[in-house]
Image: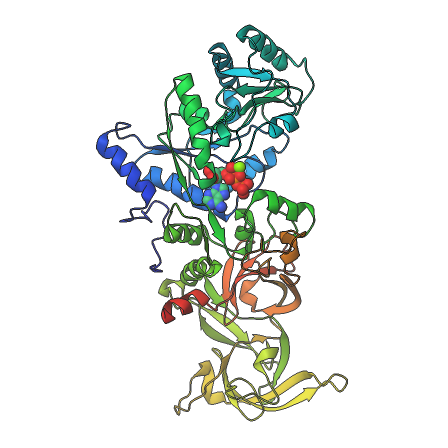
Amino acid sequence: MSVQPSPSDPSADNNAGSTDFVRTIVNEDNRTGKHAGRVHTRFPPEPNGYLHIGHAKSICLNFGIARDYGGLCNLRFDDTNPSKEDVEYVDSIMEDVRWLGFDWGDRLYYASNYFQQIYEWAVQLIKAGKAYVCDLTADQVRQTRGTLTEPGANSPYRDRSIQENLDLFERMKAGEFPDGSRTLRAKIDMSSPNLNLRDPVMYRILRATHHRTGDQWCIYPTYDFTHGQCDSIERITHSICTLEFENHRPLYDWYIRELGIFAPQQIEFARLNLTYTVMSKRFLLQLVKDGLVSGWDDPRMPTLCGVRRRGYTPEALRDFCALIGVSKVDSTVDIALLEHCLRTDLNRRTNRVMGVLRPLKLIVDNYPEGQVERMEAINNPEDPQAGTRMVPFSRELYIEQDDFREVPPKKYFRMTPGQEVRLRYAYLVRCTHVVNDPATGEPLEVHCTYDPATRGGNTPDGRKVKGTIHWVSASEALPVEVRLYDYLFTKPNPYDVPEGVDFRANMNPNSLERLTRCFVEPSLKGAAPGSRFQFERLGYFCVDPDSTPNRLVFNRTVSLVDTWAKIQKKG
Ligand code: ATP
Ligand code: MG
């Protein structure tokens, strides 16, 4: 697999030259004139949770195909289950699709817009003797359904007359019967090898206030009796969904055929799974409800609002989706590949700054007290347009605790007594001694002297210094909070658990580390939430909305270590 970054413009053809199997089908349909060259897709989320990275794959595929073929892509909410759905989710989904860089124009639809039409279609099937009202409870329906090896049993209500069915269905709609007491079922075949065809439920009685239709309905169509017809109403040509719906296709096709309406073609692809990641709204909701994360937008969540808060870019997600492609085979993608796409993009676009996460005082003993010099620093070596900035240098600095060792390990080129190191963009300094805390033995402050002839970190005599470390001026630096993240789960496959426990048993207790005494260079003052930076040597960081005018909070988006690039190099 190539890991060359692809173009980041959403209008660009990220899949140029690619022939994934879905596009192969579209090409063939265009060649044979199946839909007269028309390409119309849709992204059909159920508003029962926030979108996640898996949805991004589906969004990029549906909107991407429409874009590539000069077609259209609708946004349609599959809102047939009012007990789990909410406008909060509707709003967040629209925000997230837009953030990813896609636009549905004026084609925003809701399955609930079509409830009247779907109801009339149910009546049509009853009149054709293809549907009946069944008085079995949900449990009884399940029990009489049979198994993969045994046929199901016909419902005792299966042979009701059309007249009785019409009457009962009408009264179901009118609210005469309690919730769950009756259903409308399709009359197909209780011995079909496909369980979905064993007289599936089309309508259920449910008194729940719908976020759009209010209390207008007390019967709701099932997803299976809704989805295909919605596609048909919108004259979707290629109805792209994930593999688990493959054996629902015969049922969708049956409804479409019996109703005699426009037939979209359903195409199934493998859903995206990522290592160390749970990607199902049901489980993500559980994390939110249990308070195991701070909300849907917790920066550790794989939701689009979570990764956005963390500092991910839409470009990185689109590049990732283009890179993984689509296939018919379920697989799990290494999260290192996603992080690789992220680093590649952030490397191009973020300015470099200096920040110290775990501060240790460094005192330059021979530097004049009270003096402040402004050192010129390059903003982004990848982008000459980004220019330079001035960073204050003074006698008292902070360096990273890790960049000092009183007793250095082998090949330690950073600060240690007697060794010279470069302070990035400033001077060469030589450590003279350290003052340790008498109680703990931990270093309190490190002392050094600087060589005034090395301003800017240059060595006029050409002498070699192996280590370069970052720093901030103690008096000018901004105190900030930094949040470091690890994966939410300790296992590549979070679902790999012993009997009797669920995926939560694999939660990583150390997925969040809050560092409340960090310092960054003063150029960051007033940085707006959402702004992204590379902290030299430490990774990419993004300003969190928890920031106040007086105190910035940063999320580490991703560290600098690109394990995927390493794998590629070796391979
Ligand atoms: P979840 O299991 O997370 O609840 P879902 O499939 O129930 O997902 P929907 O709102 O029905 O969520 O999904 C909208 C669209 O996104 C569907 O076409 C679905 O197939 C697709 N989709 C959902 N999860 C993934 C995934 N992991 N990879 C690719 N596509 C996905
Ligand atoms: Mg679903």
